Amino acid sequence: MINAKLEEEFNEQINKELYSEYLYLAMKVYFMEQNLQGFVNWFDVQVQEEHAHAIGMFNYLNERGGKIDLRAIEKPVVEGKTPLEIFEQVLKHEQYVTSRINHLADVADEVKDRAALSLLDWYIKEQVEEEATVSGVLATLKLIGDDKNALLQLDKDLAARTFVAPVIG
Ligand code: FEO
Image 1: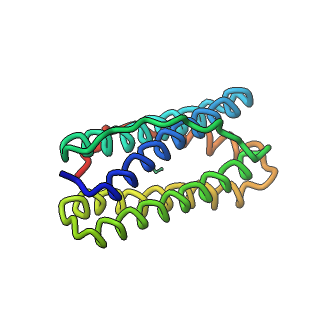
Image 2 (image 1 turned 90 degrees about the horizontal axis):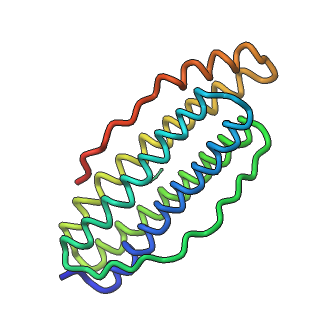
């Protein structure tokens, strides 16, 4: 059985991961409207990754005999009006998710749940990767500035991203 406090934190995080999926789906709409198909693909992969993150915790909670409690998913708000502003929001969001995962690990630590800590290790490493990937795109967007040709080149590069189902845990 899983500790009740940790169960609550996992349920909350399942919701946050599903919100992330929803937020990136909303961002994908922005790029569909701009006809930047490489960016659309990038967000498509991001959406699938977030779904996998949520299901990873969903399955884990079930495996540990926890009660799954699905909550309402907040309406996503895309704050930016340019690719650069949108990626600034993505980075801010991923940093927030990192702080949430760290908090979850703190709680697992507090209740001495080593099995949960081992699972959360995967999520901690994943967040390092997520932030690095987003920071990379953001840095390129800063270099690009108003250069439309360079933006189209980045769009081409982002078209190459593919989804690989993660093995969580
Ligand atoms: Fe599920 Fe992008 O963190």
